[in-house]
Image 1 (cartoon, rainbow, N blue to C red):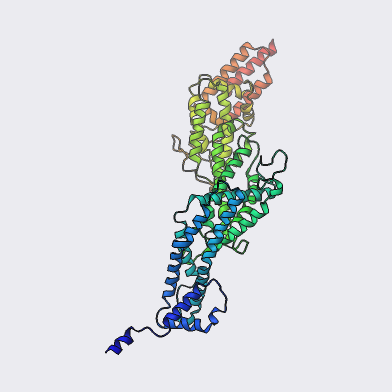
Image 2: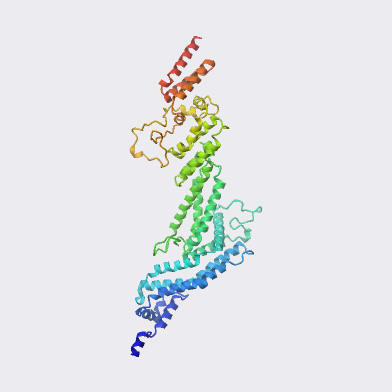
Length: 552
């Protein structure tokens, strides 16, 4: 009876030794392809698997990694970063950062090698071993490393990474001829990249350190997790600075092409930051959201994502800046047309139409629509707004909504009609826009009319933006003609025709040296705009006056 119990609970001969041999091989700092040729290791692995212990190797290795990380590796890493830095220069702080990551990799390398060996054994079914394989093991191990090391990272890591990446960016851009302004010292003996005397330049060393750091972080699948926040901060700050230096207040030049050129230089630096462990654009680890078994992603995909992010951020910042300046841009149109075109490009890629509408309406109300501004100046700005906003938004929705306060305010001015008529006939000083518009001879189309364009191609129809406002008739059809928009302020042509008839009669009665040819030309153009029947009395007055002049 005792013999049966002993046999039941006895440990097979050589099993503890086999466990020690296999586990020692998994955490050995030396990895070579001949490891499995060792007869004792092969026999030990087979013995473990035959006794059902092979399945526990994976759990043992991951648990050992977790314990070692928690008790020794992570504390050592953070202690290395937190060395006193008051008396250290930037170069020394960079060296400490790199040493900390070198040490981290040295401590974890045996476990990474063990994971590769165990995964290979599982993939090949050595000794009957089965499991998730190399890819699955790597994913689990790196999840453990990220969770323990970066679950609550110290601020010192981001400070050091931010400082180092900022320096390498400066070095990279200086080598491309894009050094920051104001870096060079008065004697010209300061390196533009590392901002130290040229005889102490460490630019090349910084780039080599960046390559090494990228290799270490890539090997540990920490590259994007450690780098993304610092890279984002640097790029956002630089884009904002560049915008302020080159774009603010400059409306007569387009900046999209120059930004694209600058972006390509920045991507050259990003390719250094996110370089693979082979030193080129290989595979970069995923920071978040990777699917099971998907350890990394191609580095060119990472760069493309950063390119899109920079484009999006540029567009958002550019729109913000131009929204602040839009009143001035409209006032300076058409000289500011390049700024309008850039704004249109960026606005189409951001969700900031409502922000623009709200800001522009406020700017009109506070800077234009008050008693201290002459009616003629308000009309001039409104005309510029029509031209600029129809360029910015061909659907005319922005014009319709943003300029509604101007139209409403002009109706309260007693001299609005008189000023518009004077501008139409060329009698207003310094305002030739409406006279030029009149010479186009397009018929006036009131914005409230309920007609449709017959003969238009249905396939060319595009819907209005969702912020389009329907008029009283329920139509969203909007005219882009300046004179039609001005006439539609009052909703009727007659008030303008009556005003012109009054002006013409006064001129014919009280001026003896008026320009007959000009008046005839104005009447003919107004006939094309408002219709012959509306201008009949004006035409009669001119003929009567001509007859009286000839008789006298």
